[in-house]
Image 1: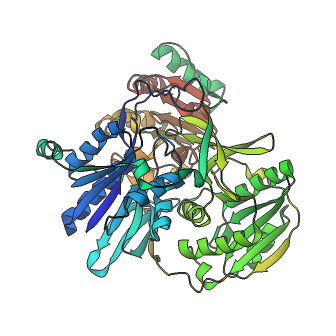
Image 2: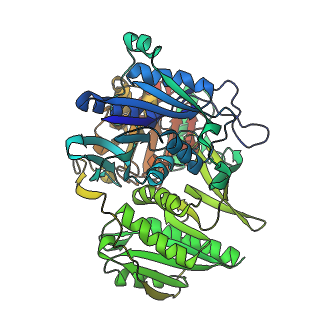
Length: 260
Length: 324
């Protein structure tokens, strides 16, 4: 099975966000990037499927040159090669554009299954994988917790998360697009051997312009203002050292909230 | 700027989904602010009774499309039906609840129509006649105002609880049946069995006090301090998703959109950031205490009392105090 897995670099989980002076985006200085959480789980699913069914895992990414670090990490985990669409000026900022670029980059690829994260940890629109499926005319499933490929039958089964503790198995013909939920497995670490091998693996670079897309003609979402929630801190924040705050809390729970 | 607002009404087991009533309430608000007419769209089979319920709200009309292919959710059939209705009627907005089904459906519809979609909205603003939608970004730590640049309809999914159902106004609308042609829609995706995760072992709904534990606990070995606090309070332990995903606690203790919904008298969240997926499951607790080292954690926006600090210091100290 040839599997393409989409991977995006986002600000790391521990980032303390600051807003830029134009209030249009975060201040990226000093922000450390890492692989988007869901995308890491998507890659893990791809690698597990490869172990079971053989074939090739290709990482597909849109990003700046510096995204290479995350891509190398993915290659070290076990992906075979990568395609990076270079977007040095950060032009691809809307799901329709991202999906069109991914579809463009896949024009000459043959793949049986495309995986993507359910959602990114920056914009978090949760649309790109599904739009990609529609652009490619492929079936899709979102928020997938488990994947069972049946390549000899040309099918894939996916367990979708639903509300209130329910899950639903769905089945689709291959090729298909699945968007993978975070936290569904243990993501492997790169071995030392993997890290060494990754240095020699191919990253095919495509300049955004080479794809010949007119991104301006696509639906676009503009972040017109980015800010911390204005209804800041409704909680009464208790002040003092540990002993003081604990005493105050117990007192308030007994006398004010009357819940103890 | 007159025009039309469409709201997709979702249903299951013969009942309209709560989120759809909220989306309809949002539609009413925007209609009032803009002078647009409001129309509900109901896809399914044998939906006359449901259509009647929706028509009892302040809507101009309820459009029903009935077809065997719409009896259960099927992304291809639902997309095709919505596409046919929307292309014929050209509304300005198509609103939906941000539920699991529409997380799957809305981007497909947006792609099929070639229109802009903003998911998981928590509100909107009307700036000089232009609608701007508010949503959270960066793991829900920041809010963003989003302008859509596309032809109408703009598609919006609304976060659960963003608009109270109490705001929904009564009224009376007409019911109009619409035929859609789904004969050429491929049957790609087949629904197989649905399963429920270990229901019944732990019923958090019976607990007056719940101690919730999140990613901040760092590892399973650290859970002892949470167990001690729960014991001192005679409380049940609940968890946010990362704790369950890491197998630190059983899945039936998960609180939130994919777990249980609880409303205890007292909820003490320890090392829980307050992602919306968790918050929807516990925000109706009478009193919420948040203990978190990050002063910007969204849990402090919904908590009654907050302690910004290290849970590994605060929690044992609180247990000790309660045992005195």
